[in-house]
Image 1 (tube, rainbow, N blue to C red):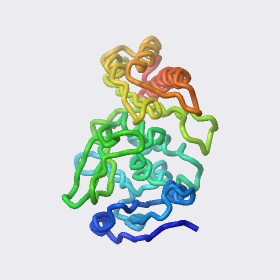
Image 2 (image 1 turned 180 degrees about the vertical axis):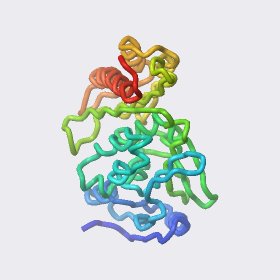
Image 3 (image 1 turned 60 degrees about the vertical axis):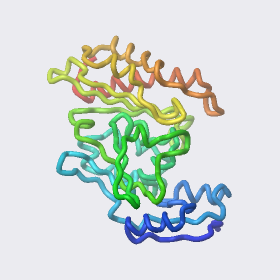
Image 4 (image 1 turned 135 degrees about the vertical axis):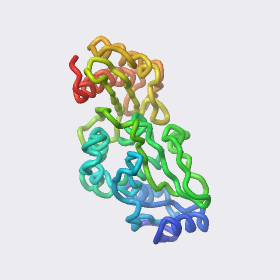
Length: 293
């Protein structure tokens, strides 16, 4: 049994916003893979819940007229992994969310829930940061969009304002076009485990595949929120593809990350993993882009 005060079922996005305003202390619930577990553990005992799980308008992946890829916030991890647009343009995102939990979690868990939790270990978070994702929120004042880098405020806290619900994740065309990525999750087990560190790299190469036009690298669990390593990105831009560049790129990430000590891993170990995984992910991303090292 779950100790909840009340459960309200939203019938539309507008209804969900109205319910949020009427019950400001209520918790939004989608798939429930996090909220219900926390409630069972007593962390959210006695809470009101507003369910948006029935809002099919918030499901699916589509391409908008300007080339933006829109991922509805209620789209499950399994659907993201299998979606043709994701497979064609952002394969790395499908691979990243395919490492969340087990099959049951991936079938019920949603991209919106994964980002709204605000946890740095979320498997989608580093890739969405590396692709300059934009978070769409709908509230009493209409639709608000903000870069995902600003959406994460601190550990476990995101910028969702009074009456708002997250309705989509947007990937601009310039962020994914001719861009190839690779994600590495380091965890104590190969499945059903939270990331000790997550690393997502993507690159765009010149037409002859010999020069890095642009590189992006983002981490989860390398700081209180997911973050980009701007020093490494600037170092790689315009440089010839080489193993030496992969090495220098990976060493440069140390300038921007700040992992912590925890029972899962020591800070120094996380730093070591970050450097090594950045190098490996960079190499694999370059190969996917058609480059040779």
